[in-house]
Amino acid sequence: MVYRILRPDSLSVWQNDEIRKRFGRYRGIIDNHQVARYLVAKTIACEYSPSDSIENLEILLSQRSKEFNEILTQNFQTHQEREIVSKNYLTLSETLAIKYLEECIFCERQCRINRIDNEKGYCLISKDSYVSSAFLHMGEEAPLIPSGTIFFQGCNFGCVFCQNYDISQAWKGKKNIEEVAQKVDSKKLAELADNLVNKGAININYVGGDPIPNIHTILGNLNYQRSNITQLWNSNFFLTTKSLSLIIDFMDFWLPDFKYGNNECAKKYSGIDNYYDVITRNLKKIHDEGSGEIIIRHLVMPNHIECCSKPILEYVAKEIPNCVINIMGQFRPEYHAADYTEINRRPTSKEMKTVQDFASKLNIIWKPIS
Image (cartoon, rainbow, N blue to C red; front, side):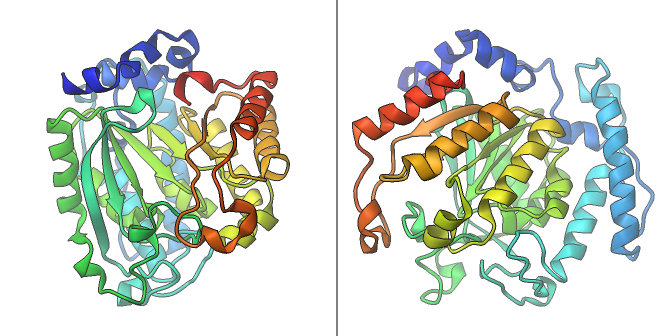
């Protein structure tokens, strides 16, 4: 197959004992002797009405989450061993997500605008979702390729060095979003995912921009997908606890960014508050309560080794030790980075080695996927 020629490490990485151990369930889904979590969720019946209050739906969501995690421990190899029901844990989560849209709290900006009525907050995404591209990605981390990436337009961050600024920032206030991206509903999104599966994808990778503003559409698309394939959340991870609770049981694999080791740098370069507190809270939750199969992407920034890279690595080693880290040297001064002298260059080889050596000292697994 073509991807094996392009990326031989996508095969050799699985010879690493730690990778096989830490990503065992994900590998099982690839080999079709484990069941994707979203398929299990479709078998859990829920009795509710769309008119129910948010509070009652949240209580039911919590109850079904407990049931889901109990069922997940059972030894079954195909979802056909359990009957799919029309009103299930997954449709419950979608219903609650749409309720949240009426006063949007998907991300920690918590704009609290009514997106159902087409009001727009910071991300400028209304109730509709827009996809800028969907393709088989050969450039992701070795265990993830070929990855079925779906890039959403729009983002809840404002990073001055954004390398995807064309879909996250640059169009804002200049173009109608429909001029630069394809409008998708849940069914159309599932069609894009199925097409990627048919092309050989081993996961469906929701990215952007950022997928956070599109939680409702992503949940809805899972109602239409049927393949036993890993669902992967690739995000800046600036979600609220409530929105994370909507997806935590359905994602088999997590690919979060961990950009900053403190709140001050995040405010300066991405325009967000309480970054470190939110990200560490969310990472701890998916590590302890979610699938726990996580590759953290840390983009090494010039002149930010002591304030960002080292604190991040120390946190990972102490609090979320099962994570694997991709220590990335791809930072380049894109977008508005030239306005900030201290980051207006690439990281040096010395800076990269300092971060890598520090990770090794902390016994963090990074070499197989960096």
